[in-house]
Length: 460
Image 1 (cartoon, rainbow, N blue to C red):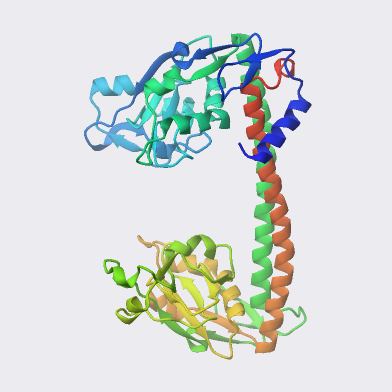
Image 2: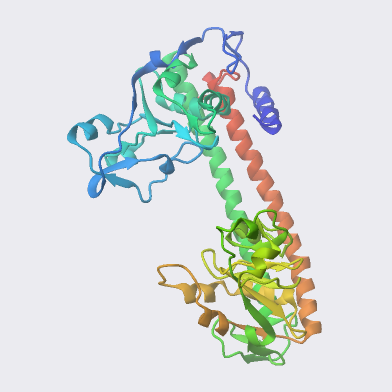
């Protein structure tokens, strides 16, 4: 558990009173528990502890078989395109999920996913879902509360233990029914379990509602940020300047003294290439930055790119169509996540998924960068209906930009950078508040399910 979570847990312990007396649980990951609680092997609380099925083949008319990919890290379901498999009557009957079953991911190469546990709700039962053989189904015996043990298994104290128990020399985590059945869990009375579960349902819903409100604030701030950039690069900074029709639908009216040209006439357009991946000398020990789809993450966040996920070698450049573009080149993705762009800090090559624009003296790289980020709807139009999301080279060559006088471009860039930074600072504060709320949520669950706080009187 992080230091922030520990601090928040301490805050929650002060907000809610502790139990009158505690005892050592005898289990390191649980610590002390209320004196009247018990600790039992999990298997003693289970009616079922079994693995799932996978069947013979995919079948559009077959049973839905849920996989780990349908589970979120925090134990919810995202069922968008589930697998349908051909199952025998026996397999379907044995693996069909029932309301309040717990389903645990027992095999994964990621510590984030091993041990994540989802509880079966009405949506899952309504779809008549089964579960895959990479998951374990735990059915809690009455009168024990399934929602309480769903919370427990997804809490940091349990997840860290499951990660530890699943560790293998191969780097893949593997749990099984025996491991899950053997872990020792706290057991309160059935009425107390109901109180804790109801308290957590209420408090987590309250926190989730606050998070949702703050996420909406971020959306509005980001819309304001986009509007700021779009307004500046398409209308200029002087609200009284005479306007004219640009002749371009997405641009609309622009200042009368501006020009409109295809980007390729104001900047040299360069396509990219990938040196042969099978030739080690093209990649091993590479020191030439090579912009690829592996850089998608940072291209969403930065204006300038200095380092790349993959580097190529001078041998790779010499034996391919790739070549080094100068610093100050505006790189632009035309495949997958279309329209991501940044300005290179140094000489770099680009993959075939990117275009590089080397700006002439008439066009500032930063101004072009902001223009490209303002044409989201136009890029969507160009890719609409495509099976594979990409912008073809003819469409890339047809992209246009307004071109104000260079001194005006510079003023626009400074205006955008200054005002955008204010919005970004507000977004950062809201995101920090969201992170704190999520930490609070996690700490609250951990404190309640392990008996560090007494919530019996919190639920009427």
